[in-house]
Length: 373
Image 1 (tube, helix red, strand yellow):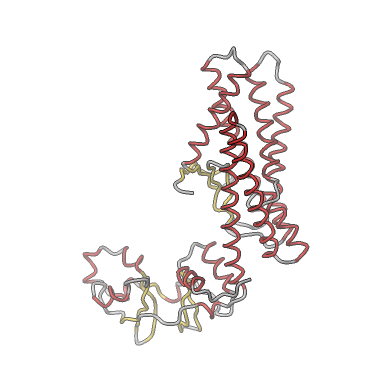
Image 2 (cartoon, rainbow, N blue to C red):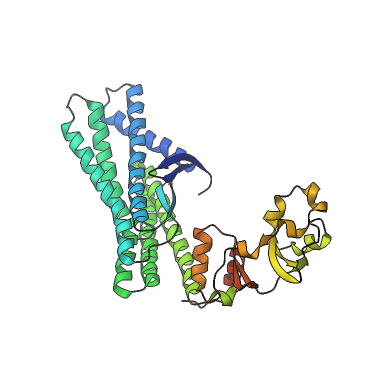
């Protein structure tokens, strides 16, 4: 989603806003300000746009509360959360891994719309309690009631990546016992929902000239849903391929090995780390004892390379994160993503059998070696 600004942590969860959120803030402030101007013509320009700005801030705080509810339940269910990002289409909770059970998926998904319904009820009560003489309070509470009800209803549409799509996936998963089947159904439903929104938005744009902006926005949101659902389908299809293969099927078993006493400035080192290669093995006493990576070399000032041997900067085999050769490739992928690792080592005692990196997995997929589900 491009660059983001970190705002800090709430309940231990990192919060950030994408630069696109600034556009959304200005857009919603303009729309609300225009609406308030028509509804309350006696308001001054300062009151009209000031109340619109305050309502927009409270709207995005409502979106944040919606995403926080997802994240808090996910953490309670044992799913790590990398953070929450607010962006032009709302917000997203970045879970480090998917749910392991249908019930967990359901609970994490449904709590978001439920939190929006609760917020809507709170603002509805405040709206009813607001003095009739306080136009500002009446306007803000009713707008936030309407927005939160709409947010809950929209998110429960049965298509991925919306919460309703995740609920649908959990239901299909629970009935069939297949996470992949649930993802297929939810992703295809997401493409369908998004496609209908694109078609409806385009029709609204051309058939109702007074509603041109609303039509364009609906089409844009629909396009986003189609794109997100398609991306999710492709990612999960790749994961499904991984599940049917072992680490031993994918790991790299050949690499360039150089003696530990060789200096970093040696032409052989530069050649070994050229092209797609990002590490080389280091031989000490005739056996591979560790590896040197491009990143590790970059930590050493280039002026010192002529006096620094490979053995001094190598990562020892004992310090490398490892995985068993018989583990499913899917497990390796999850570890690489969750622990933010570059590679995993496959060892037998102190003997290096193989290396598995993100790049290896990508090349394996591109060669089409996985079974198409």
